[in-house]
Figure 1 (cartoon, rainbow, N blue to C red):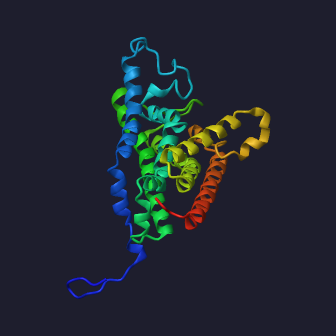
Figure 2: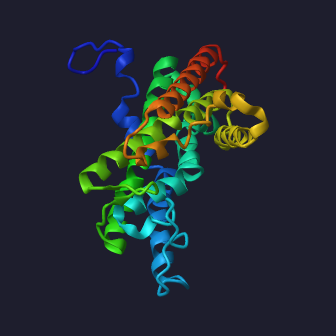
Length: 288
């Protein structure tokens, strides 16, 4: 391709669809704003409900004041943050991760813009890589926003008390912060399974909601199977069996065994899904 200055520029695959361009493009979408607003709205609504609810002046804590995770939520900002993780990880964060990773390729297909991206020409594998990186980055950003917002709101509403463990231990601010950061990191890794499934479905279908819904439903089914005690040790092979292993971080002596298993299962499952997505997309006839 020749330009007016007389210089010649050659096509470079690595220069197509820069991460910055794709990231800004996704940030400007309404669903991204709504997802992040929901993450911030959760601790806001819970704190307002506790402060101004019918039992606000009765001395009762969230959860009735029992010495469990939810009952200790109003002990301080750290406890409030951990409780918001407990509330959000099972569904809200799951849906958000599935949304960011499932609404990648499928959304382009539904807008009939996928074939134009490939005709740019953006190599197929580079397109998938850039889309997945941005989807995971937005997912990580949403998970990181939850503790930041929760801690700030909890600090205003409930003070800066030490992190109280349901096991009776108490942790200083510095100790609490690294445990909260580790909880957030594990939740992100444990949700990689849902991200991988959503990304795979995004390649297989042209309906973004179908890709997101398939990932969420599959995780819910896995959780239901995990609750069936008759399955015995077979439940340990479910990708969501160790999804709440982060509770071990509240113990004085942290046992990393279950978290390591849960993280490895999730990473392997995500890698398999992404590999198959690449395989299918390489051979897909893109007409939309």
